Image (cartoon, rainbow, N blue to C red; front, side, top):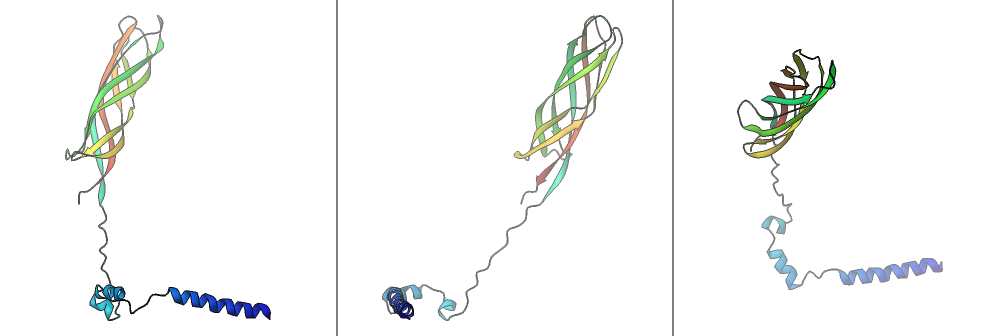
Length: 179
């Protein structure tokens, strides 16, 4: 019973303290704040603020392609038929059909092992993969994986062979439309 009475007394004390902290509505500053409210809020009506949704950005996948020329030199290992490792290198520029999505001067470095028989023509197909950085109307849009099939060939001369060839590389990249 003592606990119940103590709880009731403490509750009244807390309520009294809380009442002392409530704002006084006759204050001059409160009246000034009320004057700054819209008329609908003063009348007790709900004020609705119109929110306009953000426009969704649209985009599309764009096919990009470019012509590549690869060259490389190597030495033949031994007097007979053997494998030779050659690094084919070249530069390429890629673009879409409109010319607005572009990538200029991408370096391609493709190692290849070639089976070479002395005094016989060498023919090899390579499949280079390279990530190229693209821009759309001068602004960066990201990178795309470019791949393709390039045929290289050459004729060995003594212990030396020079290979070159060209082909097309293609890829696709997502480009957001301008708003």
